[in-house]
Amino acid sequence: MDSLRIGVLALQGDVREHVAALHDAGVATVAVRRPEDLDGIDGLVLPGGESTTMGKLAHSFGVLEPLQAAVAAGLPFYGSCAGMILLAREVLDGKAGQPLVGGLDIAVRRNAFGRQVASFEAAVDVRGVVGGPVSGVFIRAPWVESVGDDVEVLAEHAGRIVAVRQGDVLATSFHPELTGDRRVHGLFCDIVRRRV
Image (cartoon, rainbow, N blue to C red; front, side):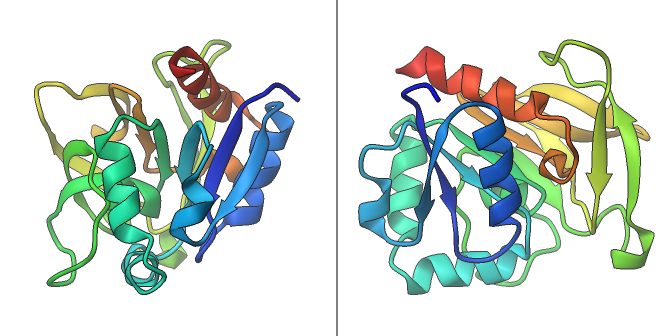
């Protein structure tokens, strides 16, 4: 293990899978449920799950505003699926008043690739990830409808944007944590290392 400490928002969703992926990438993890859990971490993962529920729980646990402040202050973030939605500036088909963390100048569409029964796995070429395509697991996945000028598009699938980066904030529509491929987590760890 190196000296990095990466938090994983542990309110709902595939927390355990992200923790395992980060451990495989050689870093220590911290379960983030309360504002004090953010102290001393070098980066933060917002996992897949249900974005509306995660936002409401973050608000209830008093961690939503600290998350917003952390991303605004430059803490590296990575969001997969629901995490991408939480990081967006706009959710085109979200619930009214849906709590968001922000951090990415993107507009996303929830469940854009279809309902649960339409889940699929596909090879995705991700800019910055060496060694060929990664396996992307798409489960009620969003896609990015529009990006701001400072957002780098890292990957597309079926003509839709599925991975983006803005500064030290990374997001994917798909779930790399559900595969044995740790390269997307490795990319995020490299982003974090350059900050510390």
